Amino acid sequence: MEQNLSTKVVRMEKQPQKRKFPIKLRHVIVLSFAIWGTYTYLFVQHPLLVQEAVAKAKVAQQVSTANQKSKQLTQQIQALHSNQYIAQLAERKYNLIQHGDILFTTTPSQTN
Image (tube, rainbow, N blue to C red; front, side):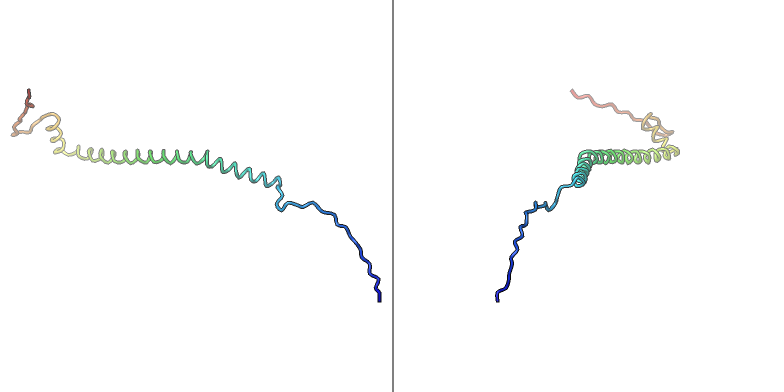
């Protein structure tokens, strides 16, 4: 009962090991664009956006001040149409008096 067994020896040559994640040119290009975009945003665009926000806040403050002054001037214009207000201005600024009023002037006392 002898069986004719033949053994065959097969030599396998070692194949070079492949990297699991080979670096390809397209990966390098995509990575470089991503880095360039991040740099551009952080160091170029973001400071400009901050400056624009500050300028916008200043302009908004100036607009608010101009609106307040406009309201004040509108009220003064409406008051100038009244004879009573004109009489008060004349009394204060030009020392004018109405009929029947007595004008008193005082001089500041001199202290030595």
